[in-house]
Length: 189
Image 1: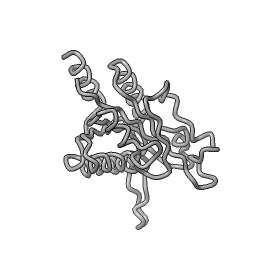
Image 2: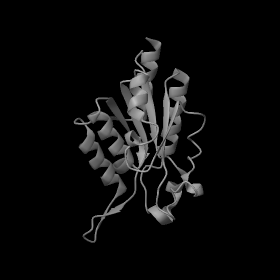
Image 3: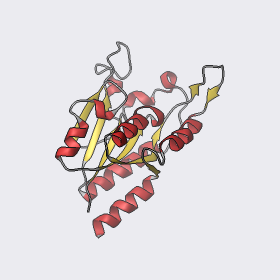
């Protein structure tokens, strides 16, 4: 069985604040992330947790703010904990790419928050660095955004665009059930 790292990006408590972030999509995100973490643990595959620690005072993701803590579904100890202050999990500390290469891991699955921001950026950078990336679209969520012309782009539409942006150029975009089924088949082989 090939080793596949599950990379959980920024699933932090601050993103539960709808007054700060606005309307979100995919209420199943957290349950799907929990299912992926459970499946990866059961299969003995590596887990990477990535957290965003903002350098901006007053940010709900600032390390001194309680919102910087992981969401409850991100439980247990990961094989690697990466802390970043930018969009890509590959630009944090410790160096995710170096760790994956040292562990001889060529495949990663990305999930977490936000679909079109840190998750998409992590997938793109991972692909550009030569990793085989899968993107668990239903284990991510995002928020409605202004189009800067007076209209709103829904979070569902943003996720649909992320799917189109990523697959097939940067990675394959798949669902949680398919990823777990693939993992279980590989473990049984």
